[in-house]
Amino acid sequence: MIVVTGATGNIGRPLTQALAEAGRQVTAVSRHTAAVPEGVRHVAADLTEPAGLKPTLAGAEALFLLLSGDLHAAGAGPADLLAQAADAGVRRVVLLSTLGVVTRPFGSTRIAMRALEDALRESGLEWAILRPGGFASNALWWAESVRAHQVVAAPFGDVGVPIIDPADIAAVAAACLLADRHAGGVYELTGPAVITPRRQSEVLATALGTPIRFHELTRDEAKAAMTRSMPAELADDTLDILGSPNTAELRVSPDVQKVLGRAPRPFADWAARNVAAFR
Image (tube, rainbow, N blue to C red):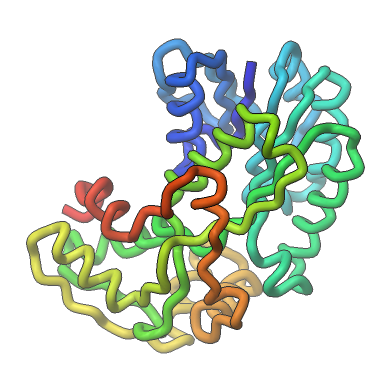
């Protein structure tokens, strides 16, 4: 049995589906009750309370660990989840980390994630670590303004990074969970090419068959919008990357090709699959 945390998100949903289609028994874990594929067991659990996950891990052979905000919640002890997994007899853990532990290692978010990576390496478990960069699904931030006004509003319109389709992250995660050859692998995951916000708006317009206007926000305007849903420190951190990506953040990684035997999907594929969110 394979346990998937964050199972109802942009990565967890396709990962759960892929594992179920591969004939594996899957337990999908999320904070709230949610629909899951037929034959998949769902468990509602709070990952900031690792003891509560112990019954779910019983009998599991592998764990996909996606912590997101749970990594930084008050009282969270993410390394405790690794101890729980080891105690339950889990053999393999695939951790969703971030490219930022390499490209910008000194922010508080990356320091905490790097500590978790180190704890996993020292846990005695088999492991693989996935380090994605920016996500194609971040374009969903624009969905409301596109639906209402046919406008994409974003800062740094002509500065891009090689964003990755979350479905490709899920496919790599499935491979690492299912195949022994990926044990000990650290994979940097990007899309196939650098793409700017302005170009993303053009791709969305093509997918919709409707013109979309691009409106470039100032950094201050973007920060004001972002801090409605994230701490100011994280907003500044994100804007630093979006506005001035370094050489490592601009690099197109070969690792999706290495694991899956195919190139990563372009943003146009993500847009075509998710076009309904913008209508």
